[in-house]
Length: 171
Image (tube, rainbow, N blue to C red; front, side, top):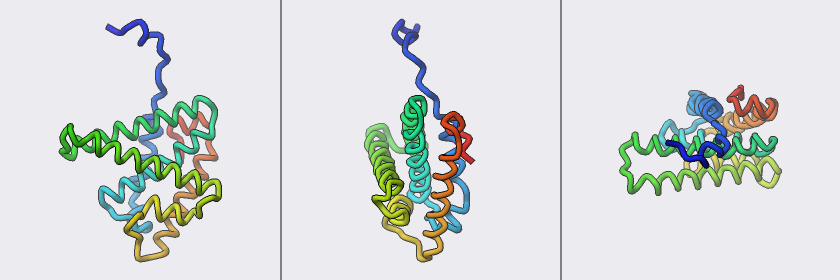
């Protein structure tokens, strides 16, 4: 039976549709072909967390509902990472530590992209940090592809209303 307090508490926003749209974007093969991102767990995580970071920043620039939705998007990311770790066979004692590490990586990306959007960090440097980290591609064209794709994604988010972004209409 639900407690009285639970019934009175406002329902938290659900970022499922937005998170699903971000995941769909991260799964586009072009990130791994043209962008030269390693098609590995680390490479896929880098793309997903970079896109999620940009979506969080877009929501933080919105109204009060959008800001609350940025928290819900982060919670969706955390829930997904937890589920992915369990599916990969990690045991309960190590999942918390692994997920905390992933959340820390997301927070770093939010900071890099915030700085890049403010002009405090060169956009291409943010791409290298956020997408490639210690494994830069051999081709500068790959970095250019990822840089332009992330700019298009970010600009696309800015072209939609808060409501549309919260509902996952990002492309």
